Length: 223
Image (cartoon, rainbow, N blue to C red; front, side, top):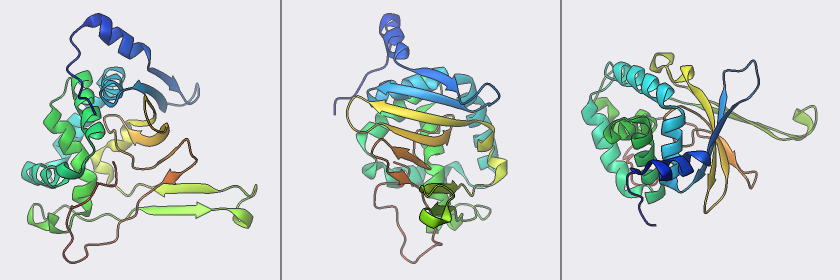
């Protein structure tokens, strides 16, 4: 995979942004659907530019609140442990997001370390207030639904103080290579907390406590 460089040419930047768009779910809804298209870097850049205000607002609130629970050292260490297992495409998208939104790449990495950090067994060494989470998933189908169709529900069990609920967004990724997907997320977060791809596969996650010898050796769920 060839890495993209920083976008400095305004004509190239315009072409990249022309491939993306933002629409509201409905006239009454405040939920935006952001359509991203291109290379991983370009989709991250589009995300950052189109939602720059929302990304900066959320990051500001999120990083202010997270310091009450953990030290930045924890997020640094969690990302460092995750780093070898993160696909280059995801790193490129995070870098594009940082450039598009005008935020430090380190902060983007911190934000994407929070889901794994909340599940990481040794987290208690970093912050006594950082409690574990246990999200819920529900799949109903057949006689359990009125129309017989299958429905998948994911409950995001994050504390409200993190303020992520203030900037919800549906991200539609249309990469140059690979499957298109829709993820239910928030501004400034490229990973998949819950969503589905064009092959009709949906995804969710549940916590399972802090088993002995837990480590972060493997691809993080969000990626």
